[in-house]
Amino acid sequence: MSSLFDSSELLRWMYMRRIARAWVSVPPPAYRPHLDEAEALRWARYLNDGLHEVAVQSGGRLQALLHLPLEQPNAALEILNARDAGDLAVAGYAASTTVGEGTLADAALDPVWAALNAQRAFLFLHPGDCADPRLKPFYLQNLLGNPHETAVAAGALVFGGVLERYPAVQVCLAHGGGTVPAVTGRWQRGFDTARPGVDLGREAPRAALRRLWVDCITHDAAALQCSCATFGEDRVLFGSDWPFPMGFIDPDQQCASLSEQTRHRVFAGNVRALLDSMR
Image (cartoon, rainbow, N blue to C red; front, top):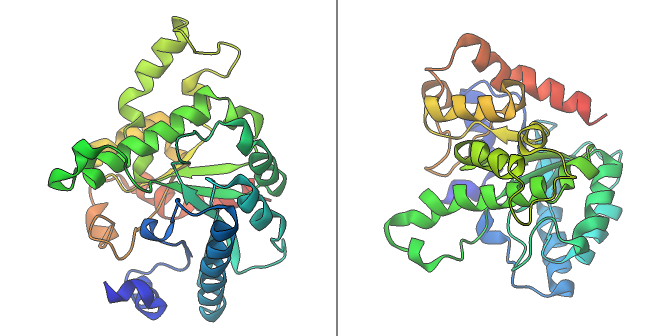
């Protein structure tokens, strides 16, 4: 997929589809979660230097989402602390939904969340590797594993109280929130009936989920409506996943069944609201 490494192809695709600007991040195969702390920091800096260069050369049409290796909290913190707040080539950060055998609510990540909160930063979460060997056949690591991993990450953020403790972080989940819309009622029921391990001192799941943003890549109008109902129609952002086949390669056609109001929000209005929340 040579176009993945050619930003001019992305800019051409954007021009043909009347997309004014885009935020870009590295693809999941580049995450390399197995690296130790020093190697993870060195690799992330290499990736981020490349993203930054692409953004600068785009003349303002592209901005970078810097890679954060959350599986190595100290390395992630160094990247956060090194950011130049006045650098217009950087829009925020992107990271994997998985952090080894831990979760996004682990105490080791508290300094990272605090730094993100202080910056009022945007953080895009996208699944990395799926560890379930049962999903190797039939492309299920992507078709089922990715939405599942997104929901696992969201569950940690909700039940661990991360979204409530760090409300200025603008967290965005890939793929319309994955399988979260299908299990939101179950999460709320578990909270309402005080299931073991559920901290009732935390914000209730339905309310916490309204703090999240999601992209629109569900490939199904009914599924996207479920995402709108779960997170709020005002919290759904246009995402492309360009140039991968599982993305929105032809967004006009793939979003044709949405109402005019929803289309306007997804393609323009919600982004303006997001930018206002980051100021």
